[in-house]
Length: 83
View 1 (cartoon, rainbow, N blue to C red):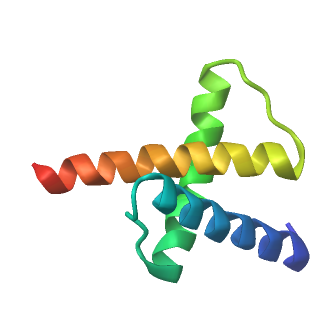
View 2: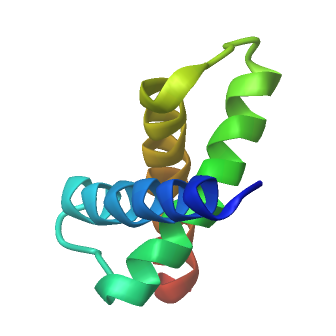
View 3: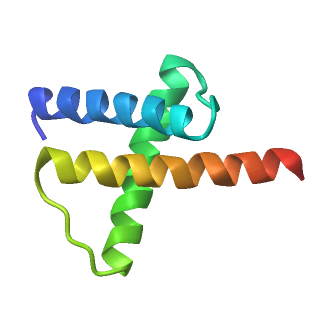
């Protein structure tokens, strides 16, 4: 992965984390937190989509996968905080 790909990956992760925070009713965790949630969410989303047999490609597919994974991650974090 070259420098440009890394920057694009991080930007997609940050936007996906922010969007997931908005979808989860304001559970965003700041810029750095959103970046982390988005990047980890991309990994979770890719894993979940793979298990369901859904193949994504391109920037849009990666973004959708990252948002879904970030929403799942924020949901898990919310459940753990309540416990």
